[in-house]
Image 1 (cartoon, one colour):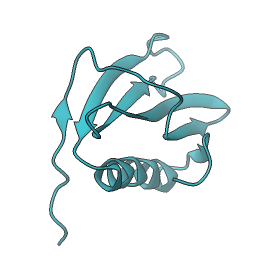
Image 2: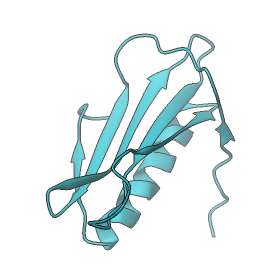
Image 3: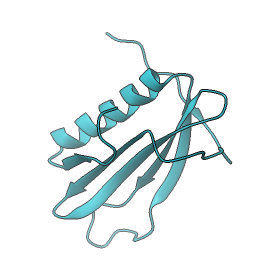
Image 4: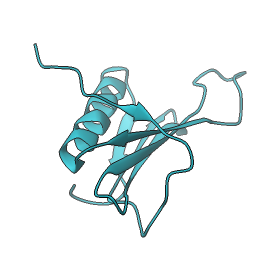
Length: 100
C-alpha cells in the first residue's frame, strides 16, 4: 500500500503565472471538477479545486478549496488520483495544460 500524500489546506495562496497543471472532469457534458496547480514563490505547488454537484437539482455554485504540496510530484499524484477516481465513475477527463 502506498503512503497517503500529505496535503495542507491553504487560504490566500499567491498565484504567479499560468497553472502548471490543470484537469477537468465532465459527466454528461457537465463539469464536475476542475483542478489547477500553481507554482508558489517558495517552490511549493498549490492545487485549487472546484467541485460541482452531479445532481440535476444540485447546487450551481462550486465548492472551492486549495491544497499545498511540498513538491510538484506530490501535487501531480494528488491530481492524478482524483482524476482516475472520477474516470472510474464514468467521467471524461481532460488535461487543460498539457504534459505535467
